[in-house]
Image (cartoon, rainbow, N blue to C red; front, side, top):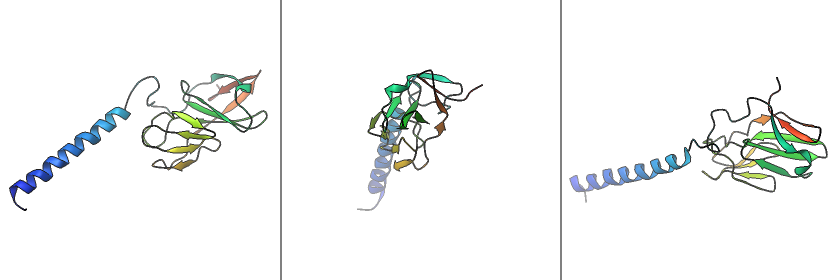
Length: 142
């Protein structure tokens, strides 16, 4: 079935698919407090709370601060941005030491920052973190 009717149908299908794809992008492009951030890592030091809240061998997601912190050994901490390197969405949850991005299904090893499931291929940016007086402090120091 060739001719103007078949061509019109193809064009209409393309327009409908473009509309659906655009709706997905709009849904992922929120500028809310916990949505995408221009800077995926803190620009100043931020207190995260008690260092003891992170179990040895485990990790904790700090959504409001856009960070994920792991504790590979007692007194040792590693922090990474919790903003996905694929499209900028904030990691939603941790399953053990794997961070899940709700937008497109990327997964990250939050002990290394490495992308372990795409579409993200770039690791999460590392953020300096220290324990001082029993509290975790992340981000650059003045």
